[in-house]
Image (cartoon, rainbow, N blue to C red; front, side):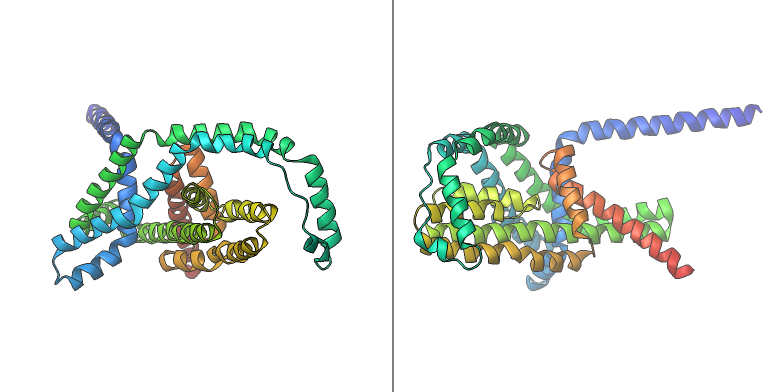
Length: 352
C-alpha cells in the first residue's frame, strides 16, 4: 500500500507541476500569441510557394526566407494594416455618414425607371415614396449602430503603433518558421506520434491542410474582391475610395461580401443622375460580388474540402470570441476539428 500511495502522490505532483509550467509558459508568451498564430497560418499556407522560390534561387534557404518575408510585407501585411488603419483614422467620418444621410435629399426617379419591364411601375412608385419620406428615419436608426460598431472596431484594433508592432512581429516569427520549417514540422509530427501514434501524425497533416485551405480561400478571395471593387469605385468616380475599399476587405474577410458597399454606391450614382456610371458599377458589382462563388471554393479545395457554412460560422464566431485575430483563428479551429472528425468517421465507414 505504501509504495502505491507513494507512486500516486508522486504522479499527482508531477502532473500538477507540469500543468503549472505549461500555464506559466502560456502566460509569459501571451503578448506574442496573436503574432504567432498569424505567422503560423501564413507559413503553413505559403510553404509550397517558399519551396518553389528556394528552388529558383539555387536551393539557398536564406535568400528564399528574405524574399518571402519581403513578400509578406508588400502583399499581405501592409495592405491589411493599411485597411485597418484607414478605417480607424476615418472612424469619426464613418459615424458622420448618418448625419450626411439625414441631410441628403433623394432626387425624383428619372423617366426611364417607369419603362423598366415588369417592375417599372412598382419601382417608380417605391422611388417616389422614398423621396417623400427621405432618409431621415433611416439615418436616425443607423446612427447608434454605426457609432457602436466603429468604436468597437477601434477598441479591438488599438493604436497604429501597436498594430504595426504586431504585424512586424508576425513577419519576424514567419521568417524564423520559414528558416526551420522542416525541423518544426518534424517536431510537431513527433508530438502527434507521442499522443496518438500514426493517427496523431495524420491529424497534424490534416490540420495543416485545413489551415492552408482556410487561409487561401478566405484571405485571397477577400483581397481579390476588395481590390477589384475598389478599382470599380475609382473608375466610377466615387469619393473616399480608400475607406470603402478597406471596408470591403473587412466585410469580405467576415464572409459578408463586397456587395454591402458596392450596392449603396450604385444607388448613390443613380440618385445623383450618373446613370451611365451607375450602370457600369452595377455590372461590375454583379461580377465582383459573384466572384467568391467560384474563387473561394476552388482555393479552399486546394487545401481541404470544407463547407462554406463552416467557414462563415468560424469567422463570425471567432470575431465575437477572440476579436480581430479570431477572424482567422475561428475558421481554422472549426476547419481542423471538422477535418479530423470527418477523417475519423470515414475511416470507420471504410473499416465497416
